[in-house]
Structures are given as C-alpha cells and as structure tokens.
Image 1 (cartoon, rainbow, N blue to C red):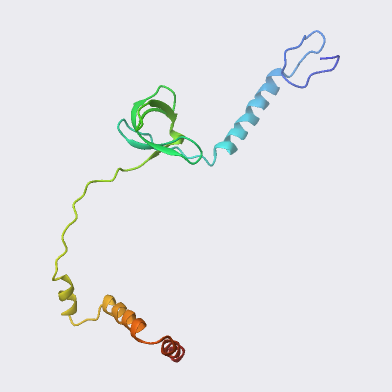
Image 2 (cartoon, rainbow, N blue to C red; image 1 turned 135 degrees about the vertical axis):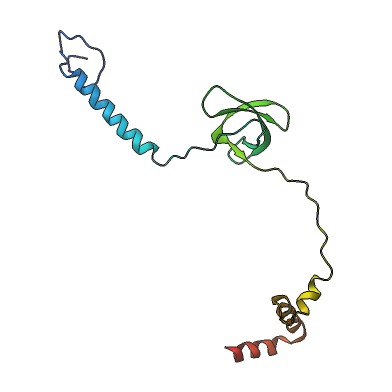
Length: 154
C-alpha cells in the first residue's frame, strides 16, 4: 500500500510483495487470539438456565427492574421471552434477568400461651429474664448511679 509492504493480512498483489509466511502468520495470529480468549474468559460464570414459568425481575435501566414471568426460551443462546407484569412480552438475555421466589401465602401459627411458663418453671434464668432486669434497671436507676455502677464493674 502506497509502495510499502503491509504487515497485516490484507490481500495484496503477490507479484509486487510476495507473502511467503502467510500460513505461519495466520497460525501465530490464531494462537494469540486463543491466549487472549483464555485470559478474557477466566473470570466468567455461567448463570443457571431458566425454565418456562419462572418468576423473574427484568432489568429495564441501570437501577430499575420490573416483575415478569418467563414465557419462552428463544433460539439465540441465553435469551428468553418474558411476559412483563405491565403486559408486553419482551426478549431479554439471561444477564438481565434475576430470579426470585414470590411471597408465599403462609398461615401464622398461634403461639402457646404456656410456653413462657415452662421456661420460668425450669429453674433456669433465661436470657429474656436478664434483659428484662436490665431494662428495668435502666428505667428505675438514675443516670448518675448507672455511671457509677459501670465504673465499679470495670
């Protein structure tokens, strides 16, 4: 090009500048590319594939997400069709989909009223009793006396 020999692999007339080591240079380039790929990919982690009907959050902007449900698995790698809660079906890469488990409708169990009595009757002082005493001391003892007690304990 412009009367100079090209160092790259661009096509050129062999009569002017014969490229003798074309295959060797091509193999050398492929080896360099493989080394670069090895270092580039060493910190990557494959995300768990999603299934149809999985609940996901879809990343809309950098800090906005919207709930959706996986409807289809697309032909392209790691791409999914997602039905948004607002209505439309969109296609997103796995990188922009975050799985979550929806809140389950569980029933609150009633607490046995005699539970605390069984602890008190066991003859042991529980941590709860000690906390109650500490709270009562804070309420009934003036602040000057608390400071004096703290210095005495140290």
